[in-house]
Length: 315
Image (cartoon, rainbow, N blue to C red; front, side):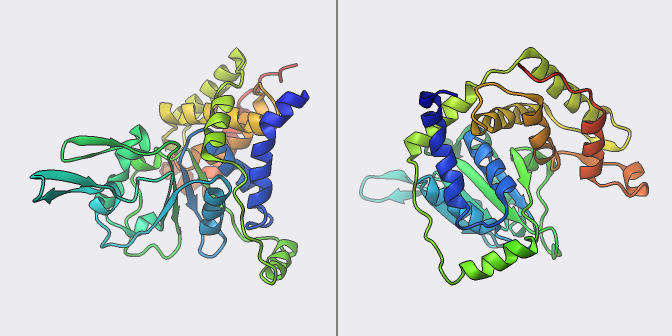
């Protein structure tokens, strides 16, 4: 890659390095989260408490100079808290829109499964169309706009799990998991000399990188490979609900962004394989056969990856 191309890629590398100051030992998850943002997608962190989900979301926001709003979801959060509301002004005799939490660049929806389905569904329009409609009037959200939601898979009594229609709006579902022993020690040491996350790119830089990631070249065989993978999820004997067309588009967009982060202006099969599980795991619903066989979603998707012929890498 030439010097000019390297300079175009360098800001993304600097973002990743900056986030590593706050989130130790989770490089793969950081790269996928940055890839999703470069692809213009939304992120769902589905993991146990205390592993750094919110820390990673905050680091992403700070390193990219994004205006960020955080909502701690509870049963009493209302849809109007998110999308805003109209209030009557006696002086003018008109209703004036009061912005809600979504009017930002990055909305951190913390523990999204702890609020009511009515409030959860308030995010559907803005996640898909980048706008909200209040009293029949549409209001566009700032660009870029990203939703990062967190939820805990344990201790879910009394919560409302996201329906498939809303899960499908998230480009990726990521898990950080417990750190390795060495990383755990580094985390403990790091508490003594905590580094503040700095903004390394502007919103304008991010928008420009999103355009460059979108321009990554895709060979015909890559489209065919994605189509084959997705089609297998829809016809697998252990799967009730396979990947949607929106999901296949998200695979393409994520693979393009990952190729960009890897300093390439073209996609190879490894880019697709490396993001396939993260894009599809929350979109795939297993049937009774899988439960009897004690197979989980990751195992079934792994089998699909293994048995789907991979095209030759581009030269």
